[in-house]
Image (cartoon, rainbow, N blue to C red):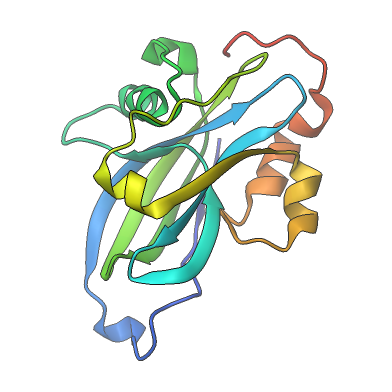
Length: 179
């Protein structure tokens, strides 16, 4: 497993990093990959900065005391309709720490990533909570090469390299039981 730390470069006008107060947050995320080697990403935006659009993986904040695999499975079900037992997520494939602003609050988030392969999946977003309904505009399945060529902002920024390291650019056509 690889671990990284970084900060989001885009910050609200006038914000000085020395003056920021960070809210700590733990999160679990899922790299949901289909048989064609595409990863599912959601297009979202910060309600405080609607023009700041970006693509990100399914997942989100952990409840107090919640294990990462349990939280990742819960978030995956809420955001995509795919229900898995947490044990089906397997081992963590990557962890990182990031700092970002969302809706006027600065967060310092430690997050764990799991890899789940599916043959295909029709995303069901009826489980979105209120903030997700207000800040997620779309979803799309992306090939790693499409991410790089898109010019779009995506998180984590290391996503194409991570997918390549995990061998996902060569998984097209392989069957897909969750790993």
